[in-house]
Amino acid sequence: MRQAYLSRIITYYNGELRDFKNHYLVVENGRIVGLTNKEQENFVDYSNYIILPGFVDAHTHLAQIDARAKWCPDLIEWLERYIFPAEMRFKDEKYARDAAKRFFKELAKNGTTTAAVFSSPFKNATDIAFQEASKMGLRVIIGQVMMDMNVPEELKISVEKAERDTRELAEKWHGYNDMLYYAVTPRFAVSCSMKLMKTLANIAKEKNLYIQTHISEQEREIEEVLKLNPKFKNYAQVYKHAGLLGPKTILAHGVHLNNEELKIIKEEDASIAHCPSSNFFLHSGIMSMDSMKRYGLQIGFGSDIAAGPYFSMLEVARDASYSNPISPEEAFYYTTLGGAKSLGFDKITGSLEPNKSADFVVLSLENFDDLDTRELLSSLIYLGDDRNIVATYVKGKEVYKKEKI
Ligand SMILES: [Zn+2]
Image 1 (cartoon, helix red, strand yellow):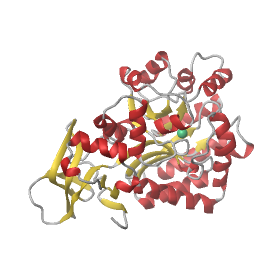
Image 2 (cartoon, helix red, strand yellow):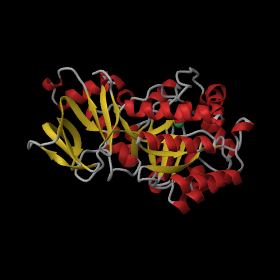
Image 3 (cartoon, helix red, strand yellow):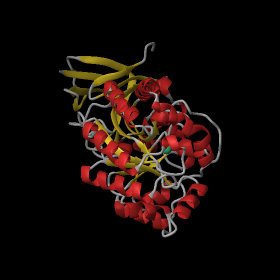
Image 4 (tube, protein in one colour):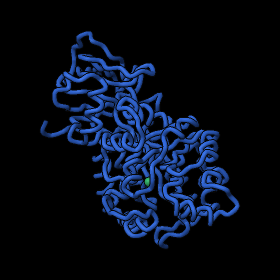
């Protein structure tokens, strides 16, 4: 069915930022036909609102939805005190389902249409996460968090079971409906043996899966990694040796990466998920987007729930503009098309261009008619949050609608 949406539409288009006033976004069978100012027969009148491409969250944790805002400025202590007990709860499948439902609903409510998600260390809970993401209709990469050392016994997995679980989940979900994808997800090099990391990297290569992990978030973590892997000069070399770096790898943080590591990551073509809200919250330091850009790395923004307290990518973009001097246009780019590119989805989503999936957000903003493009994006980034989201669509299907506007 053909359906049009009349609105002010802002998107990257043919590589440039465009602001289409009083245009119709024309959608057929979930795909964008085009943008036009020619009157359309069947249309939804969003002329009092703004349409943007759906937001992309390049790094977040489903299993930490109920562990937000637990102050503790040391990453390892924070994990031990709050996060491991939170993830332990996912053994209970009833809780796992309830949490997954709430998590994906929050994503939709915040205008996030595409996300890369860490699940918990349990296979069944991860299977449930896929089921709920599918029901909500979002485009999601998910992985079971794997750890085999330096964590409580209940959260550890053997290398053999890690391999079995990965194969089973990947078989069932990777590429499902062209919407769901599996990522092998070793938490980080502090809690994963080289054997576990190598095993996961090999399955990822064999099955063309995503790889997601954390790198260089805090100094004490880096020291631990080098103590555990004394043969290596730096963190990136540890992952390179394990085979975890490649074009389908998403590395969260990278706050303290040195030039040699940035070079390795570029050579391997892996992406960085910049999580400014999380870095502020845990006092991890400030990641330099300039050095990432100097090395030509792909960057996306991540909410990193629960170290990042909020789901809204508008708020994350705001923090990104505080951590690095980027313009509203640039922050908007990383929240949409740049984020999609960092996950390898830029041919499918991230901008409102013909043949792409109709993944878009409808937003309210007072008196936006008086604002030029920069002012409008600036207002949304510095003042916006979930309250501005009126509706969210993925593949042309409404996945969220605000009850009272
Ligand atoms: Zn994280």
